[in-house]
Length: 127
Image (cartoon, rainbow, N blue to C red):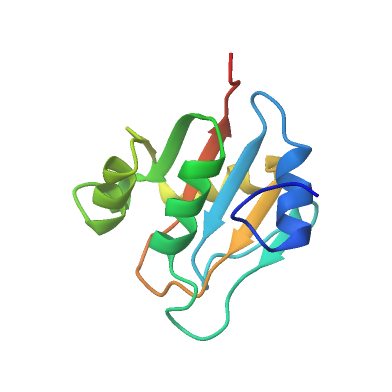
């Protein structure tokens, strides 16, 4: 049996298939999700699971080379959460962020209701 703190089997399996340069998106509950990427829906009620909860677990369990946030989130709580988890996000417009979604390997939908609480995580390598 694999030892991981992530218990969601579809998410864990999808993460195991990610390679260098693949992207994983943490999405708030209002982000439009395109056809194509695998979607793991962790939204239960508004606020649960939160962006913060998902980001903290992914930051501990993934090699993240870089991240992108919407420029509209600059100097706000989403940027603070990313910085607290060792990420130094680059900023793109919210429209550019949405345009990147079809290229994602996984989109993780959360119950987060904070505006612009979305992040693109770019997978790195452990060596």
